[in-house]
Image (tube, rainbow, N blue to C red; front, side, top):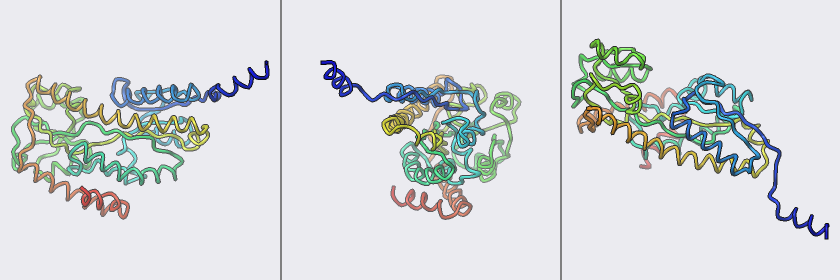
Length: 321
């Protein structure tokens, strides 16, 4: 009788593993939709693995600063992390594909770009002892301006905020004077008449309350920078197969959820700009054509600088629309 009871218990009981604990480091605020998505991912993993893997999320640079997270995960100081992909370009130039201005112009474009980019990123990550789990874009970069903008000619003689080499090049190509202003000082610069336009997301505009001097926002979708969540490959492979499956399934769900969250945040932010009195519009046909030409120029330059891997992205990206 006892033997039969024990046999039945072992037959129906789920497989239980000793709990493994991971630390996941991110540089973003707890309120960020990216961080909220990461937290949901961690909860999903713990639930799907029946508690076999618990992921503790450390937000807001609490564990490591954003720029140090990839190295920390590579060295096993944290088992998982999140960073913006453009921070990886020094050792992995292909990671910058999604931030080339005026190439990716919609969420559908951003998805195609990621589908082409991912196998290359995964190869680089594997050689570094890392594994990519999922990537989610930030809302697209739009154009804020004090005055209406109908074509590139309207930028000549104006001052544009710049904060990286790409925005400096854009300003120069459009004939604007570059003004290096941190985002936290933008409102002061606007009030002082030191700034006429800037390229940043509607979300950033809302977070920094740029309404006041700014009167116009154009949804030019200049680029869609992505965050990527990744793990230490050795830590991942040390997990039992069922737990590894729980991680990859939760990652797929987090990617789908994160893209939807990004688009919702983008729409909500544009709506808030409108409510604050900023006129929201699409770029004119003339300006849109000019920006596309800039994108073609940027992509040619990027392909030349990166080499053969870049062609593996851009040839199918432009030919398989």
